[in-house]
Structures are given as C-alpha cells and as structure tokens.
Length: 206
Image 1 (tube, one colour):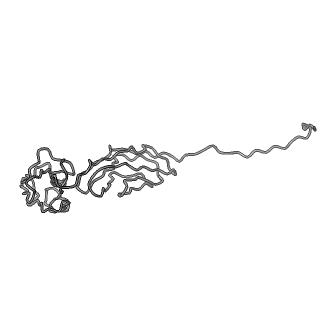
Image 2 (cartoon, rainbow, N blue to C red):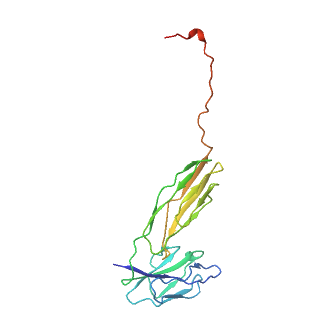
C-alpha cells in the first residue's frame, strides 16, 4: 500500500513566480525543495528516501507528469499558484482520500434562520475549511466545520459561492460552486377579531 510520508514546500516568494506553502514535513524526515521559485527555474529535491515516490502539487492538485524525486522545473502555469511536494513511501501512516459533500439550500428568506454543514471524510491530520464568494448579509462561515449559518437580513442573490477543505498534506477537495437567493420575509395569514351581539329572540330554552 502506498502511504503518505510527508508534504513539504519552500517558503519563498518571487516576483511573477508561484507562492509556496510554509515548510512542512509530516514524516519526520529531511526532504527539502531548494531553489528560487521563478518560471523557468529548477527546484532541486533533496532527502527523499530511495524507495519513495514523489508528486508535485499545484494548488493542492497533482501536476501531470511531475513525479520526479530529484527536481522540478517551474512552468508558466505555476505563476500565481501554490506549489508543494508530496513524498510517498511504504513506511508512513496511510490516509483515506479527502472528500467533501453536501448541497446547500439555494434559497432563504429574510428573518428565517439558514444552516448548512458539509460532510468531509478522509485526509491527513486536521482538516481546515475555506469559503469563497460573498455570502448573503447575516450569514457567517465556520472554518473549523465548514458550516454556513445565520439569519439573512437583506434580499438578494449571492453567486459563485464555494466551500473547500484542505488536509495537513495540502490536499484539497471542494463542493460544486453554488448560489443562495434570499427572498422577502415569510408572512402568515392575519387573524381578525370577531364579535357579534346575540339576539335573544333567536334563543330557545330547553
């Protein structure tokens, strides 16, 4: 069984180059990326075990063909992204694939509580949620649980919303983008008081 040993990255920034995540090494080894993160430059990978396999990631997703444990050449598609390296060996803990699921309600009403919490499984270490897009006024996001909760205060539609989850290895999974349309407050029928004087001429004694 292939298992995750570590995910590490170089904390370097360069004009026009990609951003790099903070250095991490979950496997306790000494794997490193060395080099300047600029398009066209070569990052040298050192310290990977001879039996390991490697995978470069761009924004948490595997880069096709980038499986060398010795070096990686930064390409134009890396500009403005986060690069990281996943090292895989047979001697480290195994982790289930990271997933996130759930379908937020597409509608809500002013003054009525709204709540949605996605379901996430798998991943290495502690999972952290993130939300993109402008939420309807009155709703808030919880980065620990991925929940959207609150009571809408304004009519309108928020589009391009999304919720993602990232594990300690930098692997990311996301929901399908969604929208939330907030309508006017719900109203019920109005009750009317009714009174009528009783005409004694219609009363019958028993």
